[in-house]
Amino acid sequence: YRYERAEAWSESVESTSTDYVGFQDQLFAKKYAKWIDWYWKLPSSKNITLRMLSNQSVFEDTTMRKRRYDQRIIRYWKEGSEITASTWIAGEYVIITNLRDKPYSLIEIRDATIAESYRQIFEGMWKQIV
Image (cartoon, rainbow, N blue to C red; front, side, top):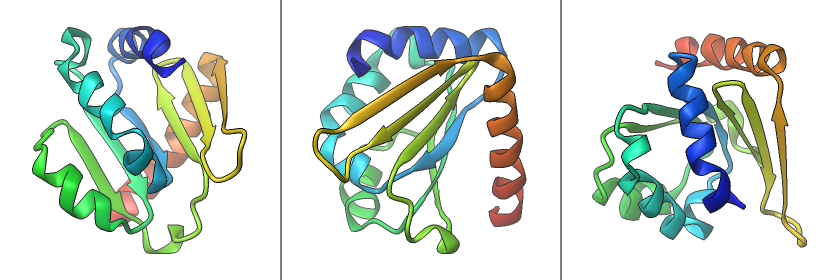
């Protein structure tokens, strides 16, 4: 599903002149590294900046940093050690994923008002960390 929807999410980010933001469970990069590689090669990702708060991750520090996706910015949030689901805000979409329990789940909400509310919460937290 991520492969099918990636272009729509990127287009929504561009059309709203926002960054791709949110909270990432550190397991996402480990389990979906191939998808991340694929995504950053898409033409639609060229003008995208991704900013995520995450829990500490050895995989992120080693494997993902070596890939040098300069537009992909991950900051560790010490209070976020128990982030166990990912929440992304992509334009007018909110995407929530759970990779801790099988079957894995993904919820996609297309609602500009909800997305903007989540974006404001994220921006407030990002400013405190950076």
